[in-house]
Image (cartoon, rainbow, N blue to C red; front, side, top):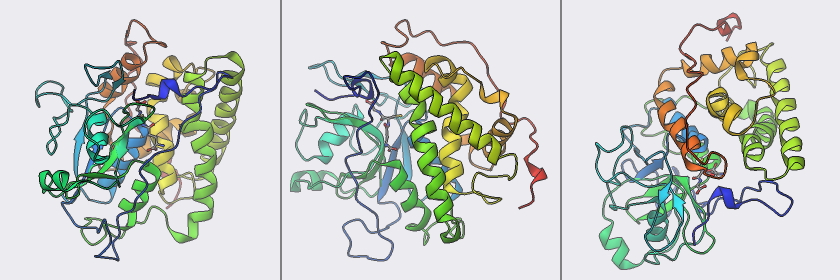
Length: 366
Ligand SMILES: N[C@@H](CCC(=O)N[C@@H](CS)C(=O)NCC(=O)O)C(=O)O
């Protein structure tokens, strides 16, 4: 049966995230490539709840790619993906009215992200045994029958999980033409969005991974991914005290370090916005509303860190970014989708922070 992140805990009780499955690239330079950068061909499947998918959404907005790449968001709470097994995962609403912010799958009529992975695998229903995650882009051979059924143009980013152990993650970059996932690894999808669609981007001049800052971005990404982005999951999904203690110590060491850096400069790699800021932001914006409670990251709250808190408001207020933050989906998802952590699915009332409130970050010159 398909797996989910809650199954990714080792015998030591530590959360151990499995790598993304679909790792192809869209190419701007090579029109004969399997995935040329054609506007309208690709579609991004996301969840507004998911920090990884939200990175992709932020890039789509910042680069002005909304009209070149469509987006479909799933429902926030995991549901049964099939009647025939107990897998819980990302599902689409049956109608556009069912869940504000979520929409039915416009191209495949899929009920779940798991089903998208199965289509991409060209293997028909119930053969995908990974974790169906979002975002995703698939790169598997598809049968002629699948190709005939998939003459739409567009990309989807999603992730899902099918049977036996596949984890259908959500952030999926989907190729409407070949009806397959191009890629479901958000760190790679954002790099493609940064450069490969510049011929059709509204903001082609924005480079969020500029050559002169790459070393510093790579270094920060490594720290932030392991200790913060994935670190909060390691705290929340730990099944023994030791792995939790280790993860929470590393998390707060990394947050302290970021707090110190942000006391000297506007952004995490200098006075210029880069992908490292987007990658840090997606976790910070969920911190006090979700991770502090649901994942036991309560040693200190984000709003007790003056620089990190104002920095989060600063990024949130960049045009386009607030539209990628759907706090209702975020809270519904985490509190409602992990029954072993929150069995009664009660959503805490607070703290309802206003991230559009004033901040003090303009004091750093660009
Ligand atoms: N490394 C992946 C992680 C993606 C991921 O884990 N996505 C989660 C949503 S936050 C997912 O879809 N999980 C599906 C599940 O647990 O069943 C990326 O950055 O793209």
